[in-house]
Image 1 (cartoon, rainbow, N blue to C red):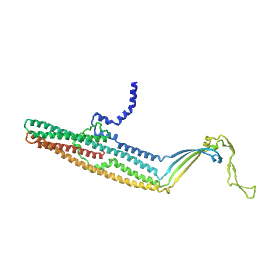
Image 2: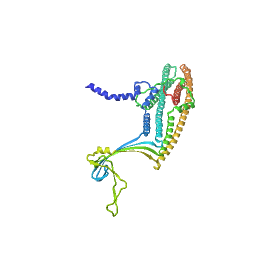
Image 3: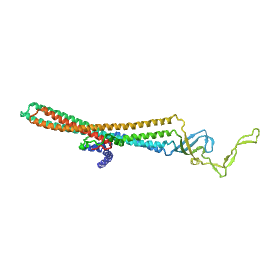
Image 4: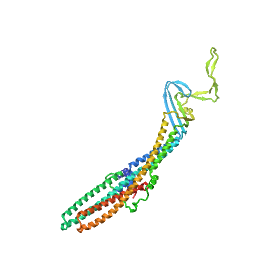
Length: 494
């Protein structure tokens, strides 16, 4: 019994466990303590982004619209059936005579219509929705790009805060080491008590700085988790990328990057496709102003309970023309006025057993025809729809120009930011080298008693501030250059 229960529990939980493994692949990495690369963060964000999911539904809707426009070239086929109950004086369809009483009737019909010409509205609609479908796929890619850029920015912030935290730890360890050395020198009487107190205060300041750096790192990690749609309590660590100095070089000019971005960015292609779709929308709307020609066909039959039991069976004789009397000559009793056209009268007999099956079979009627519809006046709806399509086309043209201008401005801004970040990084690098040498010399003089604590502390603070500035400049330039690489269609990954 226990073994059966265990297997039952496993079979019930297996789908949920499989779903969790498929939708949370990176979460297992987080729980295992493995540091995530930028690519892993991006892949996880794309798999769990609600914006990407919503954009995917827009693609599905666009595909449905496209398929629906293509289906308009198919024949339109409709069937109908009607059952009725009537009483009183009614017409018997089979004999075209009137009867009094209750009558049950059943009729059915099948109608078909094929558009032959409709001002090319269907063809232009197909082209319109085809372009809209392609644009929706590009909009999906644009949404993914936005998610990628956001995750990359947050990832770089986390890496920067990790570097700052390590710098704060190094600064604290240095001040603690110097504090212990000074403490011994004060005990030996070689340094005044004030030197020990000043270094103790500096250690406390560095401890506060370390706590601040830890809080900054925790906050940047929290923001990254939120971008990844992960709970705040989930374990997450990121890998610090190894970047060569050669990576921190701008190879293309501003105009070259824009030319590449103009060809690769999905939002530009999407805007162009929407502009072309609006052109076909105008032509499709104009088609509603032209005549429409359709081929129609129908078949129908009926049954009447009044004809039950009455069935005319011909004896096979040819029809006899019969001239019906329609009046008499005034004043002459034996002379009558007859109809000009005779009617055919068939010889035979009426028999019982004319049920609904026989009636439905015998009463089948078929027809084929052409239907021409000429729009004359319909409240100006078609003309207004065409005018709205023209306006929408102009708006799409403006949107495409605006998207191109926005991309150019973004590339120009990103390029200027990258150039400035590159200069700042090179200046910070030289500053660190100079501050490191100055601190080394001041430290030697301080340990030899040739300088006071204030000079030593100033040199140390200047060095660690220069290192912090270098880290900030380094990762600022990394992100700025990555943005330029992204505009050129290069993947964001380290």
